[in-house]
Length: 383
Image (cartoon, rainbow, N blue to C red; front, side, top):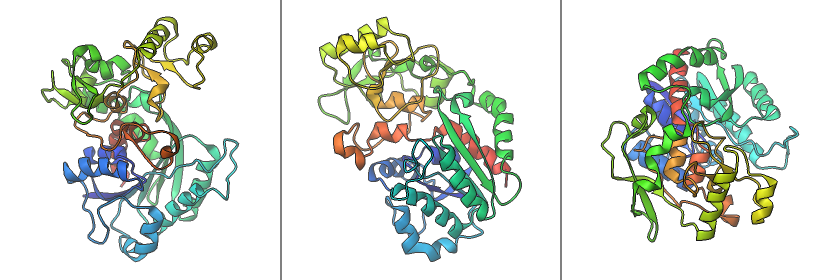
């Protein structure tokens, strides 16, 4: 059995894909309680995916606390861990590439390297947004620990995800060549698609057309005074894959709660849909017409994949209905199967954004499980 530890795990997108590709988790480190609750519910409560150690409480943890309290326990894992997966945030680096020494978020990078040095896994899988200075900093740190390191920008839409999401993937290994990973995911892609009965050209409608509001609504099962959507029959192989063969037609989808838009908001959204170019932010003329100050408002395109999903759902308008996307539609675009149930608040705002991670944010920050499953297969081949 190949074993891994997931750092900065979020709601579990990476771990879910690794589980589907035959990996077994030891534990996951995630600071936020909401995101960890989603991971715990799905990957521990429903799937028993982790062999959680007795010495670590089954709850959300800060990586620095784990290192300070359990360094001896982590050292004792040497030789037993094949993979450490996940990557710390990079907000402490400026867009110009300078490292802000006073930004506490930079300490997470050093904590990540310290954790790796304590456990000394055979392979590292590291994912984050693009950033040359950030990636170079991590690259050099890992080389000093004796790893062969290689990184590339990967477009997840080329791996079956209905979203143009480009992320920096870094692989480090103590056995062989790190570049082998990238050769492998490209080589194995066609067979993987064939096994799932999907293609590398999944459109937005392929992903979510069975979740439109016109299918019908019922009272939301988890929020009073809201309506939730029900399934129609699946209309694509991607939808069948996300539904995992379960008979869901006419049932309420998890986290498929519709926003309660005002009448004037619905009218504005419909006008934007009728008078804008899909997948591009709206024109200055439309901003002026409606006195809109928001930086990004993008009407989505039915026949292509989406732009990169952010953690802000009101950045996008559904391709054929004058509304924002639901949490479940977000999850579909990120390739979470419909059986994966999200916990915590739906949205947040203001200063609460600093410490709350609601459902939209959990999904927007996640690694798509359909990609991490392919990554997991390639990582196993490297052992």
